[in-house]
Amino acid sequence: MATRSSDKLAQLLLEESFLRDNGALTWDFRQFHGRIAVEKLLWSVVDDIKPANLRISEEWPAPHVEGKGESAVIEVFFDFDTDAGSAVGLLHGAPDDSSPYGFKARAIYTRLESLKGTEYPEAHPRGHGYTPERRGENWLQHRERERSFEDRDPEVLIVGSGQAGLMTAAHLTQLGVTSLIIDKHERVGDNWRKRYHSLNLHNPIEMNHFPYLPFPDHYPEYLPKDVIANWLEIYARYLDLDIWTSTEFEGADYDYSVDSWSATVRRSDGTTRALRPKHIVLATGGIGGKPNIPKLPGLDSFTGETMHSSEFGGGEAYAGKKAVVVGVGSSAHDIALDLHQHGATVTMVQRSPVIINNVETANLAYAAYFDGTPAELVDIRYGVGLINPLRFANSQTYHQFAKERDAELLRGLELAGLRLGDGFEGAGWLDLFLRTGGGYYLNVGASEVIVSGGIKVLQADRIDEFVPQGVRLDDGGVLDADLVVLATGYQNRKTEVAQQFGEEVAERVGEIAGLDEEGEWANVWRPTAQRGLWFNGGGINQVRPASRRLALLIKGDLNNLIPDSLRRDVTPGRQED
Image (cartoon, rainbow, N blue to C red; front, side, top):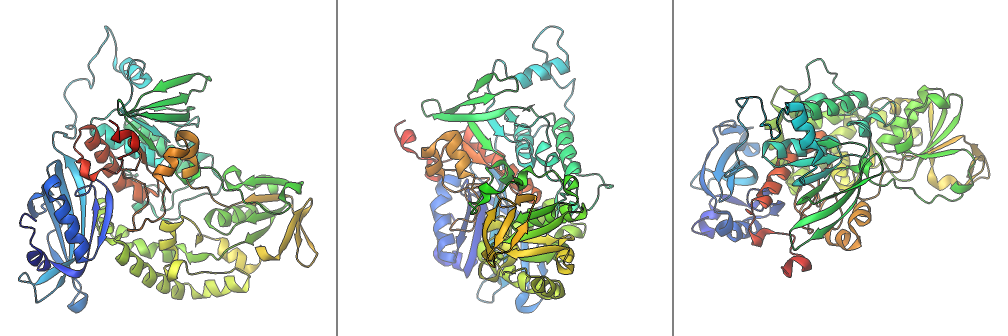
């Protein structure tokens, strides 16, 4: 890189090579596809980032070869320093006789690991763990006063105390950054605790460990919602995080003259509090957004009970009732099964194709987590696996394998009237999860009930309109109903941004989540076009590695380490500074 020699770089990189960076080279989450794009990136950042001291990593596995012949992959972990801190990289190489090294890199993943001048706290610091600032103050009084923020402002305000909010705060605390989490619920974990009765995770516990505190060995493979809820509460207490529950975030305005927010929060007693954090992290996740309520003809005339899936608590109250569930995604299937198991007659209304796989088949996509390999090592390997062209091709291959493995189940579902799909260009649910977050179901029991006829499926194009007693069909018949559940997802968080920060900020930031043009999640875990505004969310296995990068990026901003050339937040207000 120091020589900016394209010829030398060509000896290292295949023409079809890729680089994905999480903060180390770009202070962002970016991807570059093709040797020319990678070269352009490297030459553009070398002066500001000053990468140096590249070396084989001693912390991660030694270089080795996976596979044989043309399919062989050379895996190399490496460390390097930058002007701001240290980074780790993972290189996947392929044998190549034209290179003096015998191989060339096909895929490279780099991520920020630490910042200069910011050391993680030593284990068990000497003394009592605090310095009294008032005569006679004990540790509990000291922490209560700190948590009140009565005479200071947090550097970071985090909205939401789910896994994303808690992990962000945990990493910020380790970096010496003061943060305050606020949550509208009465208790930490209520975002899981108050969801529908039968909810369990559909991926195994090995994928879902939290940083600094892994789950106990006796916890079950598939975590029930109440176990997760209680774990979030335990985690917050264990790490002694500063949290205000029963507190609503009302909104904020950015003051470019002092580079901070003027935020307003409403406490449980109705009083408001003004805070001036440097950064705000929205960690409310998909279920923190506004429910998506479709306009269904005649629904307002229905005299039974109507609710969104976010309001559904359980099926106990509907024994002997007739229920219509609009939607065929994960929540729709779980709710339909719960209602059926409690004695309701259930019909699911399908509006678009759905991808179905048995959960055992789905878990084969994450097999690397289940052989005893530490989750942190699997996380970094998945970092290179998320390079978009490689990820997409692998998703297509996996989807075809999954369809063949579950062929008998899928045939039965189609005979039962369910319309199956393949996702975007045949890439299945793995790809759809990143694009839309929905449109699939990993079967944990509902599919067999559908096949047996215990849960009926009705295609939406057969519905004429809703009527007071239920649903009028295209043949004039009426499907009676006592309950309609709209399992129709949530609006994009952009609507939440508009409400809390204004339309101008919402338009500046753009869509939240979904794949951007490079293949990264848009505006999640990374800087946005609005200075000081960040988003965190996703599954636990996504949030675990990404939250640390987000915390490092915020700390880097607070320490003025981010070069102006790599900022995304050059807004009109900032240009006037």
